[in-house]
Length: 151
Image (cartoon, rainbow, N blue to C red; front, top):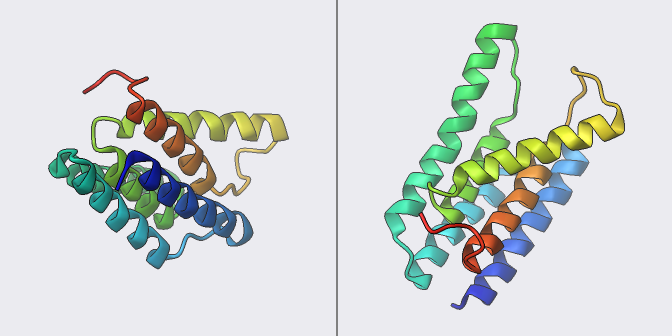
């Protein structure tokens, strides 16, 4: 599997997840499982350290889970869906733990920019999956073409 083939697979998964999340505010567990498994497989086939991808998957899920727990204690309600946590786990499986902060930062900035541009209020519901997907693709291509520093 070449970088190009892996990229096509990733684009297809992100496209389906994005459309699904935009339509239903949910990302199916099956789709997230495919993203995680294909990310681990792609890293293995491309010769990238598999443990970086495994740690990335756990870190991706854990980051959103922890933020959701803190938000729940602060506000007394859910702040983010766990489908987003699983999608970020998939992102971590694709780009590894070292690039995962770039994915989360990019997704957050894109999401905030979108919310501001649309004039959304603080309480507006917003699907986060599309922003994770766009940011993941940017980081995947930037890291694959060595535009981001090697870590």
